[in-house]
Image (cartoon, rainbow, N blue to C red; front, side, top):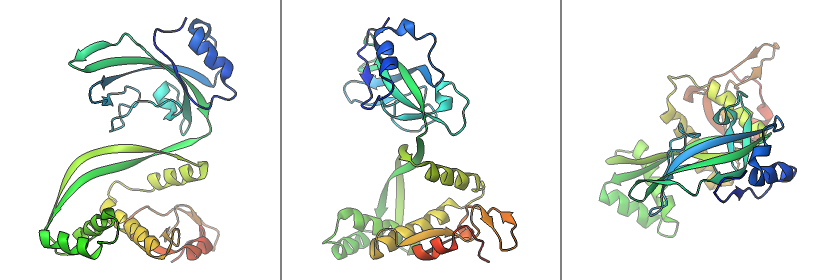
Length: 270
């Protein structure tokens, strides 16, 4: 038996049409789902006036205004499965139409969702939204130099100057949220190795400065001209055949040309 809500179905359900139809029309017939499918429940708060939605139980550890998105991915642990590095795709979301008012225009929403295991991977990028206050003369100078370019480029230059000059400045953190990124298995495995190789004492500010240098150089010389290279690769084999692992710390990072990095591959450079 279906719920009273109006189900939202993902665009691509090829190969799952029968299960999706049963979920929508005959929920009581899903007692013996094939192993790769799972039904999960979630609850969140929605303000119908501001359209703000938050408080998802499935994504309670994700610091953002986010609820599971139809067609999107969630980690297996979010749907009650213990499968490390495995993700599940939401095929259908059935929202309860009879949500009760919580406070003013904010409603407590409940929903039931159908997921399927997928071989696709997803990463989360932490995004910081900040305001930066700088001395007026610096602001006017940079924007006059960059007057023929996007305002964002001028503001980026001010951010760089904040760490490399005596310019007086102050930051005001407005918000932190996670942005989901669909990636290849190779990219996912690399980011997981990098995460494991990052010690708690790593200086993330210095690490980010190196990656910012790469972005600046690639803007100047063309996309993907420069790479950030680990001097001691995250996983390498020395000339004597011995294997090792480098750390993801700023002392082990430098910016090199793309062909230099590709030629080096996973060999250790002393």
